[in-house]
Image 1 (cartoon, rainbow, N blue to C red):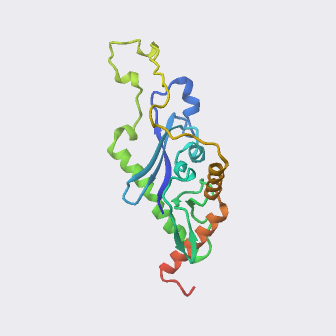
Image 2: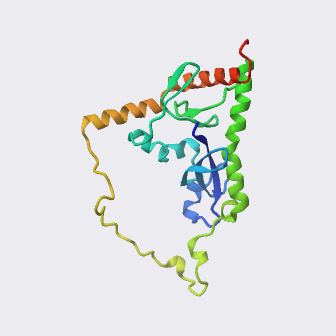
Image 3: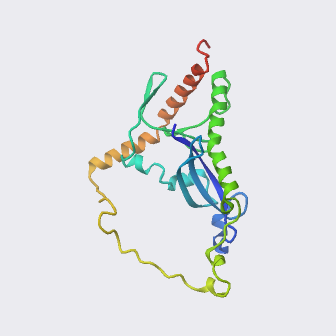
Length: 226
């Protein structure tokens, strides 16, 4: 288990009027979304910030670089065994909105069997790690807890026409030296990419992982006879 994933909304107090609709979600105030993965010690292993508040966690996930290294084949290899079955992908604890992928471990909806009930309680408790991390961020850093100011408000009051002045554009002249690796189109690399892409999104692997961990947790609790 790599960590717990979730999103929080950061209020944008001085959002431009023309952007307010795009950045306003169900609370009807402009916000910017932070996606983060945190571990039990509230260490943030992944952060993706900037998506408009009208999006939900799934919309953020489609733009997030969370799985870029994994699909590109550059992530560390992982292999572990649970309930006598081998698994080759790390996973994140996630809530119900996230898809049934091999890389997400969600709770059991409407659990009825004792082992499912106990697993659901444990999964929910450990998933609170990322929410606790968000709480610490908001308590320690006022810029996260409160509204964000635009750059113009932080500048000198003597320049009243700041908002009317066009920003100076910086032209990017392309990569220099070895800033970027060359992008290839050969079938070998594309096939590998697609294989990893499908592996991440496998509902079958998600179900196997969930079942194996439910059984493992149940036996770990000392309930082997049931």
